[in-house]
Length: 348
Image 1 (cartoon, helix red, strand yellow):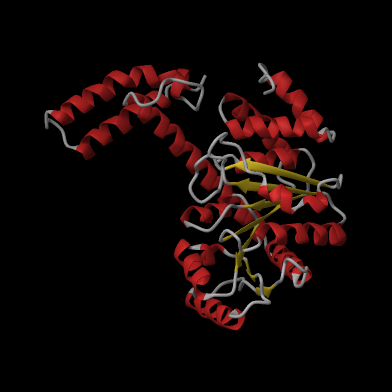
Image 2 (image 1 turned 180 degrees about the vertical axis):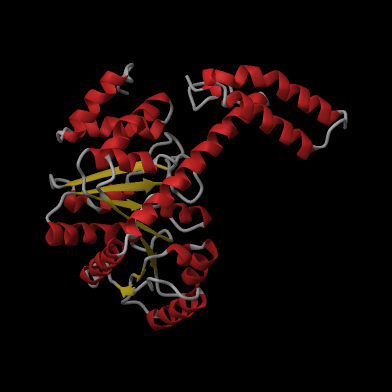
């Protein structure tokens, strides 16, 4: 394993190397982002001002629905239509032994492995249910700042947490197979609510007409929308329908860009990410106050954790003696953490 940079200057050097086309530097940057901690926070500071230009496309759907094969086909379409380089973040299941990505997506996209205009990175979920790694937003910004104008984000499967793909992507593609079960599962997970394009892949199998009918019915129940998600039929293994899917994605992008919709979506995404990060910071502070997290370099924990530990222990003791109820104890702890976090020395 490579040695971690010990200074912002070294990270800046790596970031400049990635922007200059050094793939080894780019790979190291993404590894730091994936691991999190202080280097990831510094990289976020370095890359954020240089980002904001790339367009992101998220693909999600049930395992085995053909997302990787479909993504490989879309890479070819994007290269032909735009001539722009394409990057792929494939969020793989974590290996149960090493914790690393299984790299199945790289195997299925091997036709593009030697193309200098294509960069494919597998990232391990490391136990995040549903497959969307917490590091994806920062990873996208690293690729963006390195000059990749188009980024595909492919997630592991379908589930409630998959809806979080909306927080990282401009266009969201939901991939289903013929059969009622997939449509119901996607609807339960809330994927149909965030889908911009719906794909019925493996459309050479029975049940396509019924699946399309069910999807149309479900979409009608969502009420009036400024954009009605098109339903595209594909057979990814043969390439059938891939061109139509790329055109649907391009049409959605044009729709967003026509009325400031893309900017509004990105502003909402920034607000969502800020809310999540703020909640994470407070969650770490509360965990540290309760003795469940050692002071470290994540957020504000290392600065104020030591001052909250005694208060946290005292609250637990008061709870055990029935001197205070849980909601009141939570209110006290939140108030304490908020006061400490807002002190000038906490943010220095």
